[in-house]
Length: 395
View: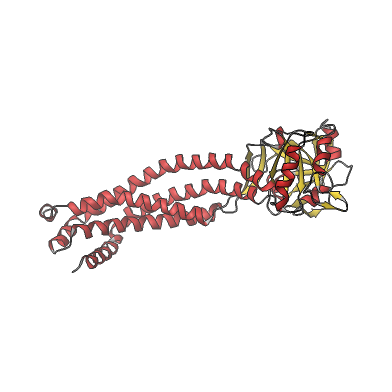
């Protein structure tokens, strides 16, 4: 019998004997499944947050902040800055007006629906150009806020996560009382985590005068961004930071993704060690229980290498089953689960949904296979080196 036939025969024999060791096998499978489920679940937080950020904006939209500011919270622009930005080359125009939207950004307190604890929610003051700069914003319930009135519209994601955001609700922010009159969607982008109102009303309520945090600009095309940026950078009247909207929000997701990835590495590293010892115990038990069988097979001419491969394949099969169970369980439990977390750039809440992606599931299953390979390697070596004479004398 050639070596490949020996391996195939031993693998078949090993798998047929699994029912006799079902308890230890299930322990290894569910141990690995638990590691995979936690790994996928934790990493899906970062993926979901990143998806919200990456789905926000378009390459033909620019965000303009004060030079040196790393977010809207730390940026201040005066009305004269907004005027200069609107006249820069490369800005799209509609009805003879530049599509440049000066915007206020403040943070207000709203209770979370899930816990009732207070959370920082973005409250944005906009002008009419905001809806042309962000055409994805659509009213889906109620009506738009009235210009010059203490009225707000609420993003769909914010309404799902924060209390007191239903139509008709009265909110006390700043020096004013505001009424919720509409709900909007923005194709799943970060705007759905915000409340919007008229900037001309929000400014006096928070004593902001003629100032803004940012100016959102719709460009004539994505290719005119550099022309627009170079013109403002060279203009001595202003000191500004200019970025594509897509790049700005993608950068904001990096901090949370880094924290989540680090947490996943620590937690799943420790859990992985536990699963590894479980796999080692399972495979050592399997080798000990089958020592006489293995010795008999070797006495009949089966090579030690074929024996080692059969033990490794069994360990990898158990790990694969555990990985698939864990990945599927994580997908069913976490994918699409909506929550809100802190955006560490603006210290305000962003509502998002966990995203269990194929890449996450594939990576977690590969991690399970690594656990299985390491957990099966040493028992496989022991099986291959088992002295035939001693093994045959075991009871």
